[in-house]
Image: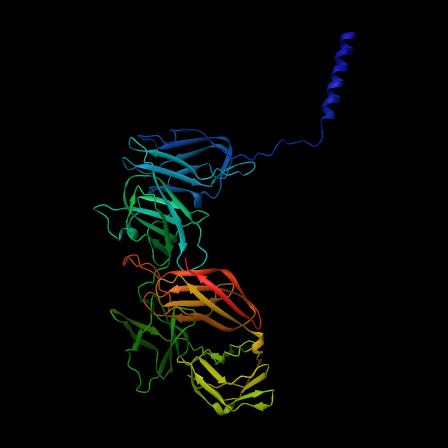
Length: 534
């Protein structure tokens, strides 16, 4: 009886202690350690590798994160291996190899930052599984950085490739075949090749195109390259400038947008492209060609005539030539639309201008009236059209702190189709010179002139450009109060613009420098800046 009573008391006590422990669990310390490799089969850095399956074991549950973008296999395989599991947490990774492996070759499966702990997401950085089909592991390395040749910021996830220079090597290999070795900048601009074999290589960087595509497509990809072959081993750290090549000229079949307007889309450089009509047309057939703003499109304007149902063209420039025929079906007619390109404030240095959606063939200046203070007419003004007849400018001597009004009376503007405007009225004002500041630049470290100095806004849009062919103080005057940036281009071929590079011609893009400090302009102040190119 006493023994039964003891068991009952012990059970009640145990239950009470158990209940007393119920409450907020402490959970223990937060796991801040990354997973690590415990074992692999075959072992990591195995030589004489001949397996089709690999199992990699970790010390804790892991999952694969962004594997598609992170995994780099070098040398690349024609048939991608199967890697499982994806989407679930396990303590292992399985690799099924679906390719025939090259002999005497070191392979690297670089998982990047895709292997993470399941609970806290701690990353196993730059995890690699390496094996060799030969009797040793290649161990040489080379590294560097990728920078954008023109833009201030460089895109991430850039592929860097090594092509072996041997008796089969030609420059066209980058368009047709996969490289010998692959690296990637992942979420940085830094790259590193490991486990390389000694030799001579061409180093190329590619950005764009489809994932795991290592053949250069100039339509969709940027490219960068080291000018001379890289000899490994080396302790040189390379910098590769990434750029978009200018495509060969290609004109597409024209499309009819409106009655009397055809669009010739193109890629490449269409400067001086000739568009000749080769159809039988009336002797008074009239046409006009304009370049569409911010589009690779030429607009072909023509006056329709009775009985026309198609037009044929020959387009040509130097060695390029092509014929097109376009059926004319639309009855849709575009109407004249005018846009004011001036904000409420007209800068003292600027010229008032408007733009039309259809080229203007005539302007009746007697129907354009300019007033100051809303009533005093300004008679001294110069009115003229741009070369493409899309923009109309009105230049006059502007007064400080003045209000202006411009009236376009009906019929002041006549477009290509002889349609005219209705009444148009625009109001604007000017500021005082004291509302603006001036910027003076002394640029040092220029190794070659001429240079192109561009004043940029905070989004790197070009506001003003000055060309300089000698050491001098550059002045940007009458600037509005704001923060500005600078871009300086070494104009190697002296054509007044930045020129890109070419892989086949072994031409690097023209050098570009950014002034990293923001320049703040204050009203009625002169700002002096010393810029040192490095």
